[in-house]
Length: 152
Image (cartoon, rainbow, N blue to C red; front, side, top):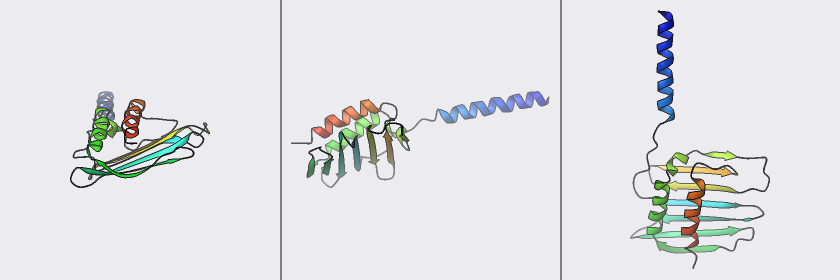
């Protein structure tokens, strides 16, 4: 009898743990209020974009380049850009990245990223250095296309 009870408890624990590990991460609700993305390396140059939703369909764009990257923007843009970014984040389940913070300290001149998405009540924050979350390259390439398009 003791063996049966222990077996049942073990099965229940395995089922409960499995359910916890496959927890579905929901996309944040509401419009993306602000977005920050930076990428680069010390020797290869670094860039950072911050977009903040303002009133009446407008957003503020601030973009800076460092270490040889010629980028310096501070202007008003259409807030539809934030909607496009939100679509990319949602489509690629970036909400599951929340809390990602991994590094490969064995690589001294690699590339890193930092992403912050603020939906008001909900936020997504992730960063990495030569380690990246699932779908990272797809998201990065899509974001670069949009962000590079903001340069006139």
